[in-house]
Length: 272
Ligand code: A3P
Image (cartoon, rainbow, N blue to C red):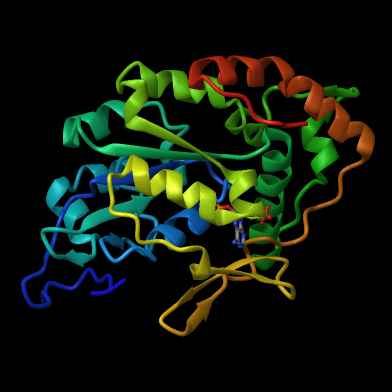
């Protein structure tokens, strides 16, 4: 939707930069980019194109809300500003900081099978290291110590959704956090977008015709006003290899934490 995002100070007619009314807080590799881009199909939604990292990076947070606002797109008063920073979900100080900004802000959390998410997380780090010509250990070495799951591995900890969500629920009421099923969003985005639209109290404007399955990419892409848009190659890339045995251990490891997560969100997911 237009007018488009900019951090320049020259406003478009009648528009201003406003603090977000909704934030996609994570989870990293859950499908946060897809969710943000798909929400921006809505004419009443404007999104910050880049991740803002305001609440989780001290240097940014110290700059205060005027800096945060300057990172937002120009909007009309009727439009909703949305930003996404997946790093918010796991950062301990963030929930209280977001509450201080606006206790009525609406939060979106997109989750995905936590074992798959670990592999996706590792694949992203591996890719970043290789582009900087730095070596990286195989996933199995990070994940397992003497054949057992290493609970200190950071990517593993980021998949302990109940731990992180519990911290958010110490600050925000449950009904202010909408959980999006990232695996369902991959399979068929429209139903998940409908639910998000309803949660954000937006008039129903997103249509099934906004999405088409791109067989080359192997994912859904977006269609608006005759333009089609797929996410870039870093989204939906082949995962680093992991033995079936190690993947099974990972699934087993997540069984209990997943159960706890299902209890606090009040629904279950068909994860491994
Ligand atoms: P993979 O690259 O592991 O497949 P994030 O934007 O939070 O980093 O999430 C990236 C993930 O979004 C991708 O992980 C991919 O599976 C998922 N995704 C969901 N819908 C997508 C879409 N329509 N196109 C590409 N990736 C999508």
